[in-house]
Image (cartoon, rainbow, N blue to C red; front, side, top):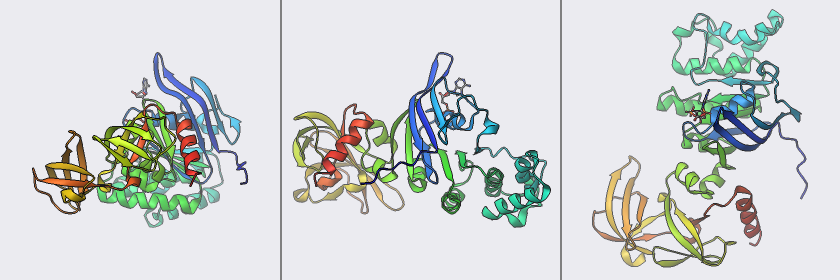
Length: 367
Ligand SMILES: Nc1ncnc2c1ncn2[C@@H]1O[C@H](COP(=O)(O)OP(=O)(O)OP(=O)(O)O)[C@@H](O)[C@H]1O
């Protein structure tokens, strides 16, 4: 295996941010590489925008170091960083037309008029607004304003584009379209995007890499598939998609006990009889005739979700299971729950991200 010696574009090492006595960010370590789509995902108040503000230079860390391109930027003001931000409210100038909004950044840098024109035209083309450059901001739609905000940031030719919940003001359909467009734009330009959202579906759909933030800490980082399939703790499992989380005991490698029964699974590397939490996603459960079920359940509730039914079933040990099913079930009927060994995911209690990664690597290497 060849060692990857590429230097991350942005590095946080042991970064804290305090407001007086309040610790808003705690011991943040992160690496951002060039040319990828990163997402900071977490609930309101978790610290996502604060991380963006530290990257852009609007805030300075209370402790720790931030490096951009290998250079320590602690204390370096925002206007000296090759970073631009697109805000949730777009922060456009309402009294200027589309062209002038986009031209603002390059113009105040004192570039020649012809160079400004070139940058503006190219940025507007990228977001497909080149035919609206004379329109006033009040004469374009919300989705178009969103694009102007992106074009305005791109006209500054940033190495990194920071996007702070840029889609949250859009309706569902437009939001889906813009998710696709942003992802496509990032891939075409090859510049680094760092995108903030509290919407897990959006994060899973758009990102190369996700940092899940809660309570001022990075809870887990990884690809969307890794985070969905192998959440490190209760918070991540609940926040990313829906999850059934049941207490269990790892009796030995590849054998877990929960709901009063033993099941084969695919996890290893825990202590003998270690207490764990077991996760099974609702879409990985099937409702079957009782004789084919691994667990016996009674149907408790169900609701129609357009493309599926969400069914709640209670097992004989009293655990409640959410099941995503294509067919309806009958309330109070006795049924079986079916799942495969690989659908059972195990979380240790209080495992650090380093230990978690090392354990996954060591037992995945055994196959
Ligand atoms: N100027 C400030 N003074 C004191 N506390 C602040 C200040 N700005 C932010 N905070 C606190 O810092 C924490 C993190 O805020 P931040 O804006 O980074 O969260 P967020 O994850 O981006 O939330 P949201 O999704 O709601 O924008 C919050 O608890 C917030 O109340």
